[in-house]
Length: 140
Image (cartoon, rainbow, N blue to C red):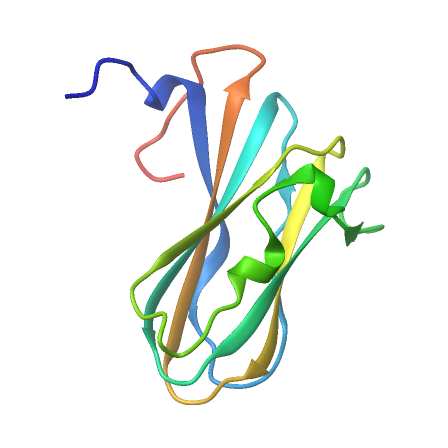
């Protein structure tokens, strides 16, 4: 049984629209603005996969919209190499944490194989707010 309220101290943001990756085009996510929060977890929700093979590259920047560079492994909780998505990863959720010092974060799915139906989406959970409670909306 849960004893603590988590909804008031996290904020969920969609950073990858649910999509069907049916080709080998890399997918660059929307950027996540971490202003006001001290922690971030990127969640990748996988649905039915045909033959998708993709790796994940987490990038950060001090400026919105430009200057993104790869996040050093020392600023990630988990390894990008463990986020390789393959055709047998149907209906799984993968996650990686970020604890770097830059305000803007995004992820790129680097696709090597993709045809047929490959369903992927991404949700970011921002936590440890500078001021709690956060304002949660039903649909953010």
